[in-house]
Length: 137
Length: 137
Length: 137
Length: 137
Image (cartoon, rainbow over all chains, first blue to last red; front, side, top):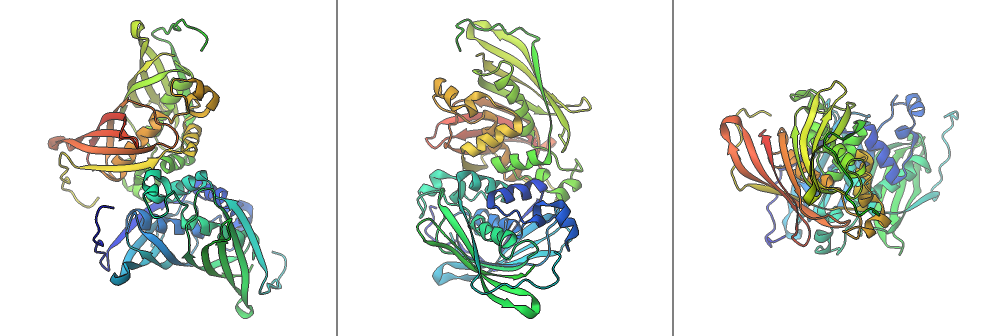
C-alpha cells in the first residue's frame, strides 16, 4: 500500500495452496450458493452417476485459485478481471487439492498480469485448468 | 434419468436465481476457500480501498451461476466443462444478486450446450459476465 | 444479577463438558480464524507428519474450557483475565474431549478465582493443561 | 520438510494477520465450542452488562494468533507447546483485530522459540497480550 512502484512479477513465479476438501466444505458451500445439485449432496443419486460418489462443486475448487490470487500471488490489492476455467476431472470428497498460480506474462504498460491457474489432486491428476487476467496490486 | 432422448434445450430459454449476499455468506466462503483477502474480511482495509467497503469474492458470485446450471437449467446430470468469467463490478455486502443462465446454442451431435451466464445487482448493474460449455443431462 | 453477595466458590468444585471433535468442527474453526495450517486441513501433509493424521487446533480445544467458564463454572458474568495453556498431546479428528474446570483458589477480597483447566481425551490422556484467572460473577 | 538445517529465526522478526470479527464468526465459534455465554450471543443480556454490547470470545481472538504461528511465523511444521494469554480489553462485533507474532528469543540448542503474541483493535487498543513457546519447524 505504501509503495508507488509496481512490484516486479516475473514469469515463472508461482504460489500454491493445498487443502483436503471435506464433506463439511461441500455442504457449507452448497448452503452459501444454493447449488444443491444432487451430485454434490445426495449420496444415493451420486452413487448411480458416472462418478459413483459425491463430488465437490467445480466452482469451490476454483475458489482455491482465487485464494492464492487474493492473498499470496499477486496478493492483496489485486483486481480480478477475468478467469477462464476448464473442469478436467471430478474432485471427490477427501481429495487433497493443490491449487497453483503461476505468472505467465506481465503486461507492464497496463500493469496487468496473465496467470496460469491449475488445480491437481493428491495423485497428480489435473482437475482444473485455466488462466486469469488481473491488475497487479 | 429414464429418458434416452436428449431433452430439447432451445436457444433463448433461461433460468434465474437471486440471493442477497450477506456478511455471513462472505465469511463462510472465506473460511471454506482460505481466501482471506483483506478486501473481503477487513473493514478498515476495505474502506481505504477503491471500493470503499468490503466486497464479496467474485468466485462466490460465480457460484450462483453454477447453482442454476446444476439445479435448474440444464439441471441435475449436467457435466460442467468450461466457464469463462469476466468480473465487471464489485458485489458489496447486502447486494441482491440475480444470476441468469440462458441457452445460447445447442450442439446437438455432441449433446453440448453453450450458455450465456450473467449476474446483475439490485440496480441492474452487470457484475459478472461470461459463458459456459456443458454436456446436457 | 440480582444478588449483591458474591456467590461462594469453594476449592474443589468443578464442572465438565465433553464433545467429540469432528472434521466439520476443525474445518469451520479454520475458516473463522484463518488457521489453515496443513496439519489441520491437509490429509496428505498430516499423514507424513509426526502425528500421522490431521489434528484439531489446540486453541479449538481450549475453547471447550472457555465454554465451561462462561456458561457453567463460574458461569455467565465471569470476566476472563488470564489463561495459561500447555499443549500436552494432539487431539485427533473424532477424539472425544472432556474439558474440566476446577476451582483452585478463591481470592475473596478481589473477588477473583484461580481455576485449574484441563482437557483429556477418551483414553484419559491429558491433552491440554493450564490455569485461568477470572473475576467471579 | 526437506531441509534438515534449522531455519534462522531472528529476534524482532514478526508477522501479522488482520480480520474484522463479524457476528457470523462469533456465532459459528459458539456453535463449535459450545460457549453460549450470553455475553457473546444474547443481545439483551449484553446490553445490560459492563460492555454494553455483545463481544467476541477471547479465545476466538487468540485463534488469530494461532493462525499466524501455524501458517506464517514460524509457519507449517511448528509444534505449539505453550500459550499464555491475558485478556486486556473486549473485542466488540465488527472490531478489526490485528494479531501479531514476534520472535522474542531463539533457544537454538532445543530448537525452540519464545514468541510475543498480541492483538490490537482498529484504534490501537491492546486487546490480548501473551507469549508462546514453540518448537520451530
